[in-house]
Image (tube, rainbow, N blue to C red; front, side, top):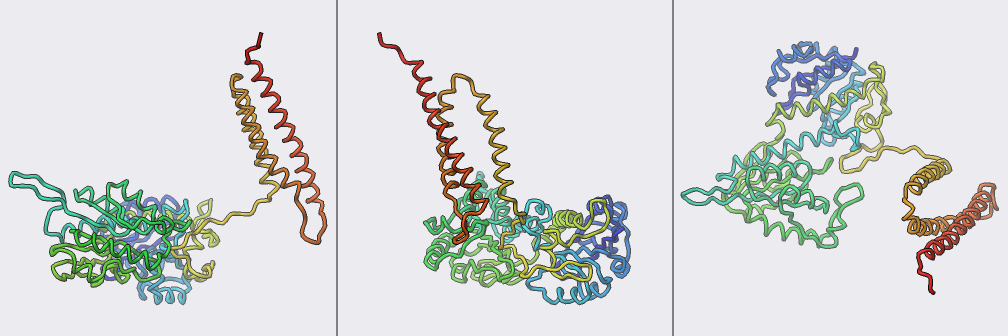
Length: 491
């Protein structure tokens, strides 16, 4: 039986834990044994007694690491934790691979297979493992609460005997998971909310939450999204127009929340010092991207900076400020991911060729598997591989399905509708005859002559064209005769 170990988070400011008592029960039911370091869940309000009641074994750090086949972490393990792991162990967590290279090198040197949850691909069956979405959702919620706390006024409009208090104006920059949750939270608190994003598709999402969308909606904006749903880089002209619009809008706002992050790169600068200076004293800016350099000029990680009466809130690890719920969601993500290490019979047998494991693997270790050349980042769309299908089989399948659909459609039509149905079949046959003529005109590669398959294609195309032609002309003839039945005969 494979052992999953959960240790206390030792990185500064990290209050979350990788497994909760509820997920311990699920992991044990799936076939794992679970060891939890004493005190691992205290910062998240999960006492040791709850882990023990759920079936986990409580032990010290050294004992937990020595037993671990899999180590669950929120952040990357410390050098001391890595040293205590056995070779061929597996580490799963948010390892920050773009910035924390030293930890990856230490894991690789130890022979550990490390999986970073940031690289889990965006496919349907991996949605339950998407830690970025689960944590960003809570970060957006907490950002608005932090902004409201730093703001010296109420958010909703209040009508009292002494007079009316106007509602606060909240501007959310970036309408991803965190941004949408920030919009929803600010609306629930009664603020007047506006939002912006460079993706045209975000407009509908923003407006569905009751906020007003702010953007320069020209032709370039309408084509500013890739097929994968990501933003394209805009021209300098468009950026200048958007900056002017935002500058005019931002100076009227009471609370601004910035949420833009690009995996593997510094956070984009959204708010300049000039724009900060244009805001009214008492206004608040909350920067969710402060750990990656910040969206706001002047933001400092872990601090609230005041400049010209405007507060810039730069708290790091906002999900960690609601550690109980953040840990619960993260633990469910990891529990789902752990299921990939089990075979269908419940045996511990990681399939390193599984597309999710292959995408998340950052150090191959001695247990097998190898990372792909060029690590997958979240600003790239990953599409599950599709096995090639023989074109003949594919076309035959379509033909068979067409027979069944056509049979049930035609025989379900009442006799009174047979005349318009005949017109529809004529139109369909007209489309068919185009394909038939193209097939009949098929030719082989230049200089290769006519192969057997090409001759078959030509023959089938000619036959299809002939049958379609019979259907078209016959259809018109029958339609004409049926219409004649309803004509009044002249005396």
